[in-house]
Length: 433
Image 1 (cartoon, rainbow, N blue to C red):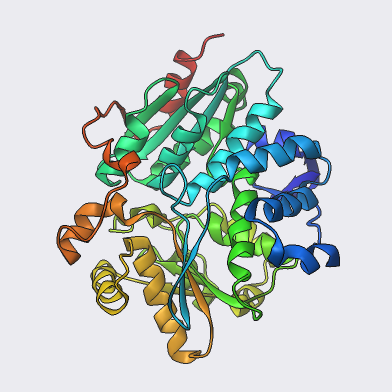
Image 2 (cartoon, one colour):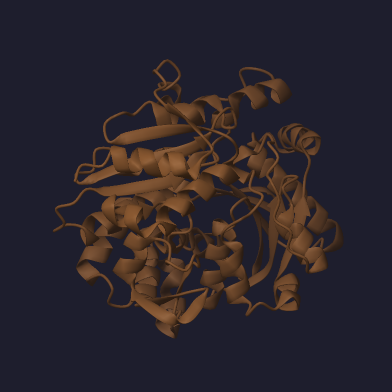
């Protein structure tokens, strides 16, 4: 499997290099040269397969011979050992629960797959691999869990101070071992900018053996395709997927799935007030800007990196993208109201990100009442227990033990200014040559 940079379609690398390098030197993003179409044999069988068997066949078709099939099957089985169930609210509204992994967020799908792929790719390396990642919420916890105490790796997580929930913060600061959390005095966009700067400094990238676990890394997106296939099995007609969106990796993963042959009716990009992409879908003008802090913090992104991949899929054709994807922005007050509405109407506790998705689905269904929508519930509501308690009262939500046990653990983080130079200096200082 070969991949090219979105900034240079004539420059190719093999899959392993794309995964371990993460970001091309020209600041583009890696895209597959060829996206395999799933054949009739797959489509004849897919509804009767287990989730893991289906996942293996999809990933195997995409990667071709990049990883030996026996190794890939073991990676998929081990990484995706939890379900992605669908809950029907009513005939036209379904929720795809993506929080049944170890850190209770959809990021577990990508992080666990990535960790195992990287471990296989570096199995004979002597230099420690540094996994550098920016997080606005759940990515950090999922990556920390997936790579915790993995031999030959260290994980450095940048997160914006005061802009993630308390339990999310504990997930990425309380593990210790080979996990280090840098608490940045700035926004997620600052964290993402600092990470990119470290990768684009060739001396630092090489000396520190850097790789990324953000959705700039193609190995994060591949497993995120799989739960769309899982959801699509509930109906014989194409679904409308409603995706709470921040950095747009989750939505890009669905676009890759459609290129493999998955039929969808429509795609809805649900955002909070950080509505750069919905604005583009309405007007054709792309205007990245500083992000604004909201209740749905994992979506607080003002310059989504995966937008370049979205443009690549559609050949930079705004009309093609806007015909397939609609964007709906939602305010915090609307999000709070939606949490109450979903509980009062359906008895279902939805997290702030899912609530944004619910409102976007409602806006779509007003104009398309016969569509079957699937709303992605990307994180367990217990991660936002304070907001849930404010809207629904205490006692409506059981906190899973693997999350509740973090409450009394010590937070360990290193404060840092929003400075790429300071990050690079710190990385070099902490690297053993």
